[in-house]
Length: 222
Image (cartoon, rainbow, N blue to C red):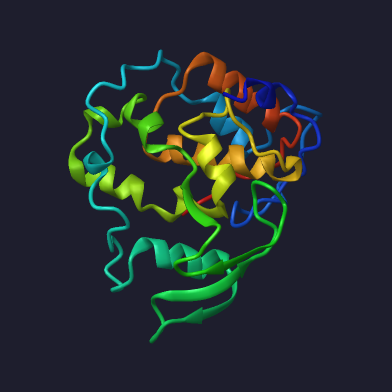
């Protein structure tokens, strides 16, 4: 897949990605991890080889868009409500009928969302099949369902770009919109840290190369 994207790491601007967390931590020397930064967290991730994809299926992570927070709205609508602007509902305050994705984190463009005719997907920042190969196959169904519906691991994004990403990790795929790369990688690090997922050596190196350009980028929470 887009291996070249992982090598072209310039142009990163700290804090440009959606709800990635603030970036007001004091920066140390160039490329050095600030306290509480995503770079420091990336450096601490466990490195292992990728396990086989054998047995992976979407159903292993529970029903799609389960209402895990028990607010009577599917996770998909919760994320749309968080990430879109000018939101309108079909009825009540749950099912999103339309809205606008301003500065899509993968392309930097503005995209109109219309239910049933949408060019907006909800992306698992850490793809579920990637998680499966880096620890999740050893979990029970409840923990996998939690990962699949965790807002920390979900972003509303351009649908075609999301589908081209596939199950790529940082070593094989980065957003074409360079100002969002620091926030995107920081979010991947945060998810892998939270769920104790491991990374490959190439993946960790790619994470550190991106985040060395924004050493004050904080680790997102959620």
